[in-house]
Image 1 (cartoon, one colour):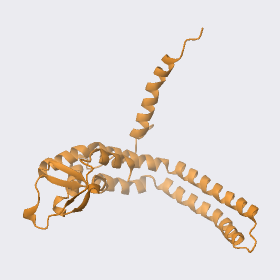
Image 2 (tube, helix red, strand yellow):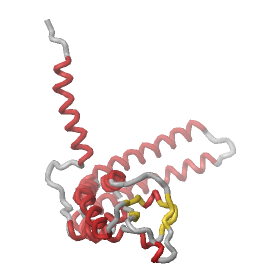
Image 3 (spheres, one colour):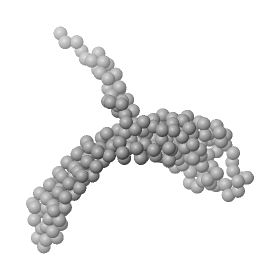
Image 4 (cartoon, helix red, strand yellow):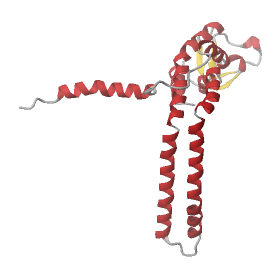
Length: 219
């Protein structure tokens, strides 16, 4: 899952305490307390799952190109890896040869990773775009689910050691997400950047005038 949803989940966590919420008998359930996995709530929303399916079609060319690039890299790596393993198992391994082979393997792996990142960049941007649309509605979905269930204290799922299903508000939050954002756009506008990058660029732009003003005037 992506960092945007995870960050939103952390921001909405009501507490960091670790507790046990066990309710073997429904009548024993403490009213007003619940826990939820916000990342799971987002992942199982219709907007997220539908977008994941649509992405396979919309970006089929990039996905196929990436698969071909992986196969090509694997074909280049296989003989080198076999040669490296054979040389390493020799009674008197040639360290110079091993270092040369290892360097060649590392170079192919690094080049392949960079190539794949470039090929799949549109796919990654699509994922980030969908995640951001969902995360923008996450707090409203949590608030609506809490109000409907009359929950005054909502814990993060990671803060609960043991919890009865009666306390789990995850599905209710998903239902609210489905109401608030039944579908998401999977193709971002031209030039779109994820929120973290936008905020970083904005901070840099704000810092530039301040840095220029702090420079002493030349005489």
